[in-house]
Structures are given as C-alpha cells and as structure tokens.
Length: 64
Length: 214
Image 1 (cartoon, helix red, strand yellow):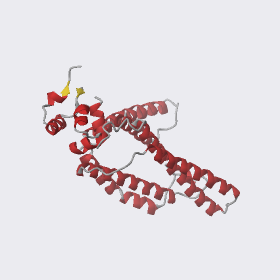
Image 2: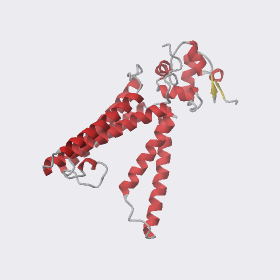
Image 3: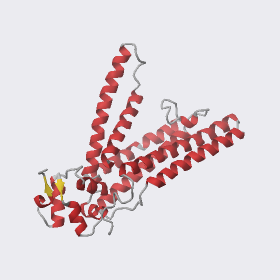
Image 4: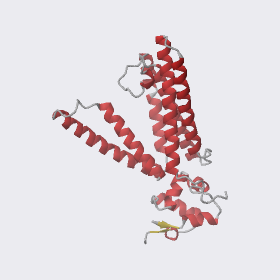
C-alpha cells in the first residue's frame, strides 16, 4: 500500500525513531510501513491520521 | 531529530546488522563455552600444558571476533521514550540476560570431559540436579517475560513473530512426519524429539528475524 508517511515525517523534521515514539511502535515498524512492507492495522492507521491531523485516505492509498 | 532517513543512512541493511549482532553473540558465547569447558576438563584431567595456551589464544581470538561483529552491527542503543516500547526493550534485554545466565549454568553443570565445552550442543548430556532445579525454577520467570513481550511488542513485531511461527509449525509437521516415516521404512534412526525441537526453533527464529529486518 502506498503512503505519504515519509513525506509527512520529513515535513516535521522527524526521524523514524521520533515518529516511532509518537506512535508507540518500533523504528523498524515505521520503516516497514513507509516502504510498504507492512500495512498498519486500522487502530494504528487511525493513530497515524490523528497525529498528522489528516484522514486515513489522505495518508494511505491502496490504488497502485 | 534531523536525520530523517535514519535506516539507510548508515550504509548497512538492518538485516545485515541483525545477522552480524546475532552471529557475533553466538560465536562469542560458543567460544566462552569452549574456554569454560576446556578449563574444567583440564583441571579434572590435570592436562594443562602448552596446548592449553594455544586453545586459550585461539578461543580468545574467536571471542574478540564475535565482539567485533557485535560492535560492527550494533547501532547506538538508547531506551525509547515511549513507556510501552521501553518496557518491550527491557523485556527483550531481560530475556537475553536470563538466557545467558542459564546457558552459563548449563555449562558449569555439565559433566567433566574433553568435549565439555560443547555440552550445550550435546543436548542429551546429563547436567547436575542442582543446575536442573535452578533452570526449572526459572521457567515461571521466563513465562512472565514472554507474557510481557506479547503485551508490549508492536504489531509489526507480532507479524514477524507469527510469520516465523508458521514456518516453524510447517517445519515441525514435515520433519516429524518425514522422520517418522523414514524410521518405519528403516531409512533413518528413531526420531529424536529434541533435534526436531531445535530445527523448529532455528527455522522460526530465521523467519522472525528475516521478516522483521528485511
């Protein structure tokens, strides 16, 4: 699944570790989501959306 | 806060880093086991000599090689500011520490002999009842650590764990059935449950680590 997580993170000048701490996950989890190797669960997707004050659809895109 | 591409910026893949650290730990522990076992055997047999010096030098070089691999692969370790992830990290460290202590105890409780240093891997070798009792008594602590791990690991880690577990259960299925049929056909010796157990653990671990750091 495509996503804008890396761009959103960069806009805030956060490292993967910084974002991981905001989301209560590991740095590897953030990396796996950013690179499309792991699709987040619905609860985690909502946490990400709330953190960036966007809707889930604005961050994640299942159209390849 | 400024490095926004911190996974790739250090020039080595996370999987390679993990392989270096795990390989380094295994090599260092193995070499330390050889030193302990050899010393026990040499004391029991009164066979200290110039060969002993050679064994110690080679084993120490292997230990240093393992430590170098760990140093090369390990990134700077800091505890997370997130309480949940911090507990997760502490649980992993605690489990590793307990494993190291139990492994050392098993070495010390192994019978004296020329191959005592390798007794961790000769899994049917007897150990002293006291060491066995301590190890059995530690199982509830291990169970609690595992319980806390499952409560604190994030969903990506859980997915990696489950991926390794599926590979492990298939390994168990095919190894046990295959070995049992081969035994009944007179092709192999009687199935060894512990050999299958270790095969499952190794495949599970490889699948878990690969999925987590790929």
